Amino acid sequence: MTDPRSILITGASSGLGAALARAYAAPDVALALGGRDSARLEAVAAACRAAGAEARPATADVTDAAAMDAWIATVDARAPLDLVIANAGVSGGSGGGDEDAEATRRIFAVNLDGVVNTVSPAIPGMRARGRGRIAIVASIAGYRGLPGAPAYSSSKAAVLAWGDGLRGALHGDGIAVTVVCPGFIRTPMTDANPFPMPLIMDADRAARLIRRRLARAPARIAFPWPLHALAWLTAALPPGLIDPLFRRLPKKP
Image (cartoon, rainbow, N blue to C red; front, side, top):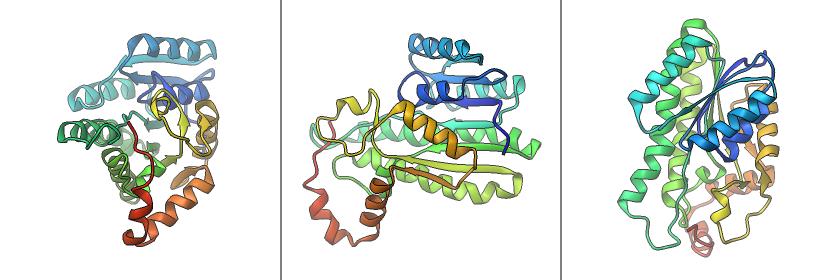
């Protein structure tokens, strides 16, 4: 597939989203960057402009469906979107006690509703053009509900399944859908974890890997492979066997 020239990325003010913006930044590339922190977002945009890209930051709340509709319509009208990366996400866990309903709804609002609010407005334009790529950032944590982070893992499981279903639904429209399932990535989100994170990867390295594999428009990108294999295995085994093991894992704060 040809390299995307008009790209929208959410959660671009830090972490993996910022790294993806830098990875795609190049001359003749238009980047629409959404994030919550305007100062950090502008710094990412400036770095992308220094690499030759046209970068337009927007302070975007992915939980606001109407605002996302308006922003994405404006971006698509200016430079028809080739690639949308729904990356914005928040974390949480039960390390400080059980996740209450409010915390669970907040995580779902960003990680699940936010993905829908990012992807859905981009589909009509791509469908009309008969081409486009959508990348949904889920997580290896979405392969199985985790006692230490039940809302986070289940929100990622939901977008993983939604992306898989959407891929088939949009196939006839010429729109490729890839679900990205990373393991641990060194970001401000994982900096809060007080436990060892096996095979943790720097955000820039992860972004380069994602960009390289997205060029082939695969159904799924999951890495690192040992962690992916372990996650797949634990999802396949009976809960009665796996639950006692998972209850011993450290809890995410």
